[in-house]
Length: 358
Image (cartoon, rainbow, N blue to C red; front, side, top):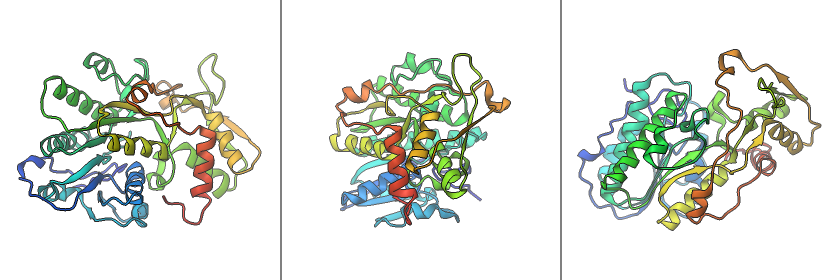
């Protein structure tokens, strides 16, 4: 029995990546395809496209949990299983764009063959299909490609710069492997999609992440602790590095709505191809994230600090920050929400509402 692909699911389909065997037939109605479209970022993108009046098809595995609720409000053209992607694309030549968010995104996945098939070879096939059919492609890379950050967080697409990166887990490796393959294709002058953009997402938070379990954002975990469990405090890891106070470990936290705005802009402009970081460009501390959660709920801040588990202590990142110069140079000039504003919007527009979905 084949395993199925779902964004964020550690058990994914052994998808047939041979999309090129099929000859595409003309299809009259142009539309967008979003793979992983019932997942976190994918469902937010699908919702934004539908809200703009676009025809949208979602490719994902819904399973038997509540993941389907991420797309329950959307008027979609179709929902297709990853197993059927090749056959579906056979008859679709007039895609306006393909947004490829589908992947095994669990950083704990250890089946490297599974990661290679689903995160690398399937993306290769999608890239090649888009190049042949002249379909714009936006795909998800990841800030996990930067590993511990020792080589920096510069989205330099040069082969030398990419070769210096050392991802720390299989997920990051599979994303990095495709980035390097795509850059070689470009360097060697092979066919490419008319627009291509690989997006290195940093610490994304926001609505429709509820199915992710332990992989959900810290912002959502804080809400669960303070509002659902009615606790009066949250816990953060202590610092085990001299000169860095407890809770002052820093991340580039980016609201999912800002990620969607970048993707929409890329598809609208149609000319800003590249490998781009998607963060705010401004690292903020876990203390600030916690204070923002308390403020959004009108509660008095109370933070407890616990030792970082020894199993992850040596590999724990103390700082991530996206370099955003390349996206800005490409023409994107819209602001990104701060942690304070993003958490407030997340809590009040979604988590505190009866319907928390986008």
